[in-house]
Figure 1 (cartoon, rainbow, N blue to C red):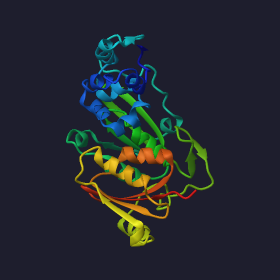
Figure 2: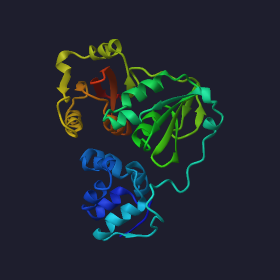
Figure 3: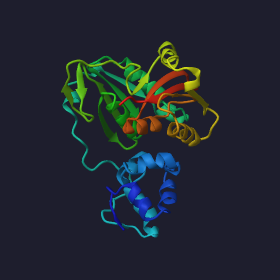
Figure 4: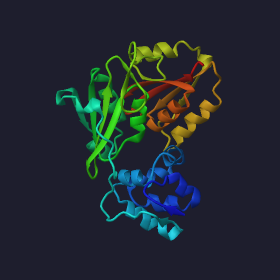
Length: 292
């Protein structure tokens, strides 16, 4: 198979399942592909170039580990430096015209280095930024699931890589506009604030309990996944959702916000999810069927 920097990871795995071990060996962040659910979510959306950027390695290093498996590179990288996009997307107009004082920066590199998932802090920071301003996340890779998650919540997003292993991701909160899902706003009569009837909403204890109490105890399935090892929490939740009656709710005790699960559920559009961040080590989720 002839491959290049734009070849999807899913194509490699379909051609030769041993590519999984080869790719995972390149860098620790790429070991996430061993998780079958994360692999399902990421592989079909991620190219070799994007994966190399996430792993902090080069496209040529990908080619080197894949060649023994029968892959041939059609456009090898010229050196072994960490890859960068050949043609970065132009800076969107909303970012060009945004003054520095209207951009709130959050550096999550130390959190990630310590093994802490910064999603809760990022979501809280985005909730706090005023309409017409933006949140800037400083990271070492492009957080694709987060970009898609906030795009679907109405944000305009843009990511740039000023240097290897340094990524700035911008999340612009529009003022009385609705976004098409990519980078530019479109006019809308009235912007709706995040609330319990959004598909995915982060709420406080009072709102969470109000929504939970709308269901009788016989119609609430409770599961606790806090002690399960990855990827068992996602397996357990998806398994319960598969058999959840339409009039029932799934109440989940979790230790973190499951960003990949949320992205997948948001894409399918079949469930509403309320998130109550109880503490740094506890999150409660309420999942209900989305009314058609």
